[in-house]
Length: 494
Image (tube, rainbow, N blue to C red; front, side, top):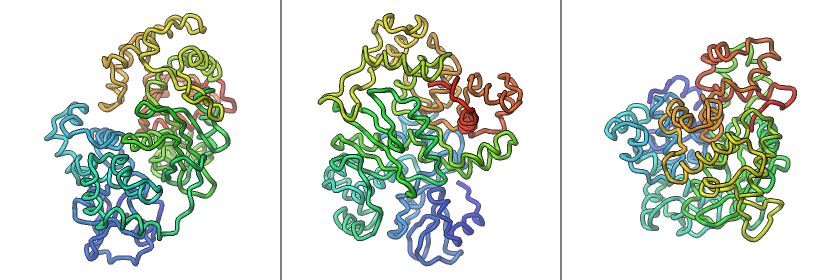
């Protein structure tokens, strides 16, 4: 991947922490790589080597710095200078459990494994396998640093198949055993993590500033499904299922901290990496607000909106199937109306949380199997939408339809819209929230039209699509800015 050396050098020499995670610098004299903002003595420019991803720096023979901890930086934006195919592959790697083979990954993306390796070498500077390994190792380091889990539990929770492989990977990356690494971490003063529940596992979710927490939590609160979700101030809780066990996950934001705190009431298992990834997607933690503002701020319509809400995020969704069902329920109705229908569906077909209510959270959202043959006629859902939900549920349950945008927005929209009762708005909305697609754009959305009409801008679909071309690849963020500009929330979808 090509990096502008002059800009990178400037960021390193000025210790500009805003670029943490966007690139890494390897120092040839020490064989250590750092992130911008590292407090260590500045290296000479001639000794600097720049990498877009930590895996590329490690493949080149550099080890993570023990002072700036580059592995704890927010994730590199997957759109950062890569091709569309590589961006989708990176998203798949970072969204997965780290065990998908290159051949399977390539097949899901619709290309050959040799071509995928070539694209990674050109755009990333590291192989898909290196990215997967680095992803697991760095997550394991976080668990060693932030939790008191035994090393064996850390190994399996971070995706390693054996303790021996875990030990070897930690030693190869950090030149320390897991025990020695944990002792070193304990000696570094860091803010204490405040848990929602003192018995829960707690982890940091690093993010970039600015971060508009108020808008994000308000969006989630307005759409929270009683019994499944709850928002109290800057704390979001929901019921989740993990390897057959049910529990509660909470994500909270404390003032003046550059991270969110994830608390989990379930014992950590091999899907912990997936749980953390999904929670991060809900809060769009890997967004690059500076890059987004630079693009959207060029439009006179969006510039004041971006200035008014710096760090606005795209609220994600915990589960693509749940979000798809709720999007169908939200077709042509208000947020309140959609939430009412979702509440009825939950009461009729949701699964009670084992052990009873936890702070008002009582149910798990119905599974595809439960809704595939559900009689929805008695809960006020229109027939066409009820049929669409059953068809989608059956297709997902049987494996005939995979809820993924791995092959891009166009492919996902085409496949989803092939199911009866689902149109472009639903497909783009699901892509925007369930998959964190930064360029997803529900052009026919009523809320968008109202926002444009309020600004006295042509609001027909053709004019909107034409204008939105200049917002790419961040049209999802433009959508959130336009929705947020409305004086009232009527007309927004759930």
